[in-house]
Length: 92
Image (tube, rainbow, N blue to C red):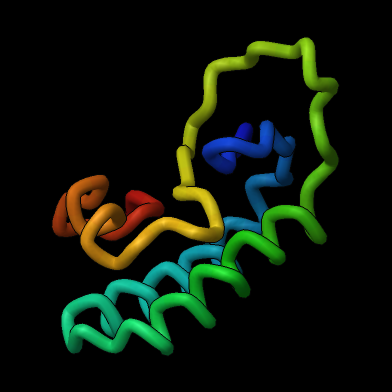
């Protein structure tokens, strides 16, 4: 699976890592629904860190189709709400 973090680049992750990312996505969605800005930023950071930690970065000049596109670390709760469907950032 190829994951893009907006403004940073792309990472290749094994499909087996999907469950870990999905758990963080569920937490992020719950915090958004509560309007918990602090929790949202904490969990978004954890989600992005997990992608960076678990994945292998693609070269900057690589332009692979991304299966997931995640917001930048400084994205606001409102900006991410606009990106989402009811399924969260990571489709289940």
